[in-house]
Image (cartoon, rainbow, N blue to C red; front, side, top):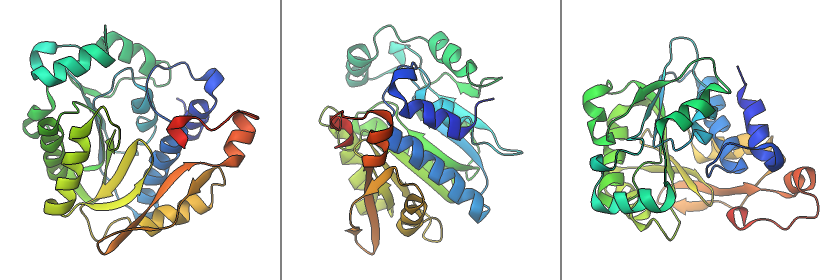
Length: 262
């Protein structure tokens, strides 16, 4: 089985990264940060990804389960009848011809067996998964406000102590519903920011769990990650992370920083 470090390295090495999708090196590192920091704290539980596309981030998450832990994924896999009109438009625009077989084929290149696959709309997850049993959840399913709002509520119910949620496309212009749902959860639901990249936002509801300082400390030991000053969110702080000069010198010498990492 591929290790987390090995797969994160393959994501960084653009010339050798042949799994389709939008999962960038800074997030591959921060996914590892969540897993390692939780391990140091003794935080246990299952892992979840809502929206898998062809498996690019799921492959990495699949490296994280420890003894007794499971990894579950949820996706409608091209079943457009399970989607709202807005999400059908999103799916046909960005994921044409998307099939479950592509996800399974890519995942099994790196793992001996598939995760627990729930080929249903994410709104059904509260009836399928036990509350309080997860330590990590990546939300990357439908990007409309109503769907993301429901997914956030679902994940809050599923996460246990020390659990971390990651929201994809929180700041991208083609998915305004994600940002709207994220900030509503921050303003009204006690969501605590931990870290963010151009594409993903890391947070928790557990005031006794991981902190922005934990992420900063982890990043300090990884020279390829670059962070800003602390951004204040009420009584909490979080930093913005991108890939720094050591990364570009190693993997793409002489290449300008791409827009996703600016």
